[in-house]
Length: 347
Image (cartoon, rainbow, N blue to C red):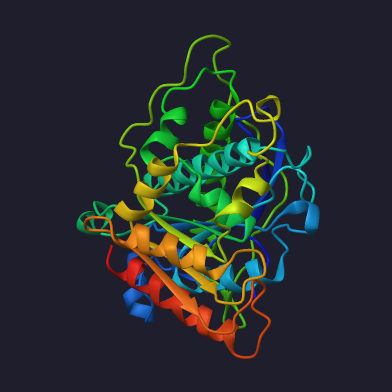
């Protein structure tokens, strides 16, 4: 199960400024620095993960039990972890949309925050890795369960996604997200330096907070400058019980008249290409009540057959959408941990 977050915050969605409730969890390896090997622990490798939750109108939020279980495994593997509530879930503002376009922008907003938060943590000196290690490209694992997995599949490629944060208008939501990431990183860097090496009963000292640091002042006009030395992370994707086929179109209301769907998702081939070109795991059961297993098998076959595809799909016998059947949860977690662990260790 997930521990208390290292800190909580809100960010504005780039879609319309809706306030999104977010949590960030620091892995234990973040405390070790280069000295970690002296204490039997490897230093943090700058890898991060974002995990998105199921459909809000049906009770989905970042407190979902399966999100908690799977995301905790990513944190344990060493990923700096972020979870967030889509609009209409938990304490986030707004309502769930008819089209899923605002939710895609919600996810993009938090990915932008996490990418810049990790970069500033490293550049502020919170990690003490040797130069050769620092030069390695970090991983950003974008993950989701159910509706969260569906939104993950519809995200644009990471380099395209992060373009919105390169030099945004100073008064834009994208600029506020970037500045908030930098402010939080500076605050947490100081806390981590103070806490590193200190333990209470064998556990790292808690330093969580729920208050947003003051956002740095920016010029009233103009744009933010590009971040010096920013490296686009290596994207990877994890999809648990992904919604595919007809249910995807129903969930995004793309079958209703176009007046209700004014902005379309990224082209299907573009979304699929990003998952074939980067490490991706999709895990699902053959008893999913929302998606016929035949559609999932066809989808997996199509993505896996692309040239040099890095997409892998795994079907678990007797598993349903909620992973409540005997033994299936552990089978799914074994696959997730193997995928996340190899991805972490190979970069």
